[in-house]
Length: 283
Image 1: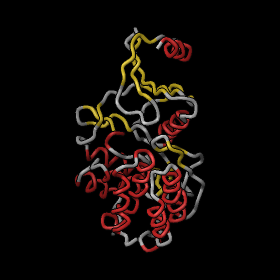
Image 2 (image 1 turned 30 degrees about the vertical axis):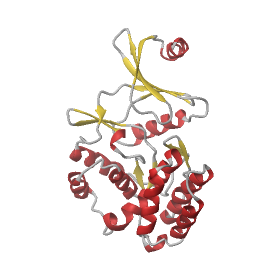
Image 3 (image 1 turned 90 degrees about the vertical axis):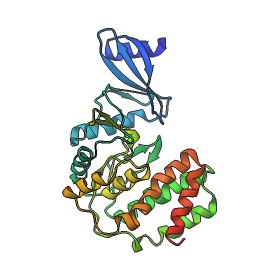
Image 4 (image 1 turned 120 degrees about the vertical axis):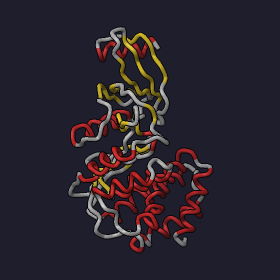
């Protein structure tokens, strides 16, 4: 603790008086640091190679380019990220639906020339490649579906026969995906654990995995762990109507990516979820 406090003092000019662990932190431990003057900040602690500097860049991009509320970045290094402390609790199961829909729809209205991003990002601490690509099907196939399946297979978390079935599905994506998708700015890891709320008001979105992609990627991810309910989607569609087939087809297709992220990180039951999804697409 002394070494951490020394480092914080060298960066901020103030020495913490207390450290309290917070929930979350798939990349590193998260804690609140209290100071004698009543000031509070959040520190995410990692090791060399954690990529916390990339998380800091993502938060800074959201601050500079969007109206999405996120913590302010105070310091970002590979093994240490300091952020402003935002009041609020994990909003899972009690998410302000209308406000979330307004904020996410406004985020998705922000577009770019290509899919991807100007730098590679992270999701759950895993590398997320973002080469500039003008074709959404190709980007989703190569940089999301096959890439993450390959990582999971190399880590021996995904059986080879399931990887082969993912390849078979990848060859048929044009049967299920539209060809008129426009790039939207995505949060990228949109589940309730990454939304903070206080007194039924959103205070911050945290742990982003940003890039420009199909807006339906965020929407699909939000259904994977029941982040939002029907009120969210009704409100969202007042801003951005959904194309036919999202709930029936593309939601499950796009959720293969976060499922594969979870397979790579945790294995176990998530392999079964991938298997069921593949069966639903006839592979």
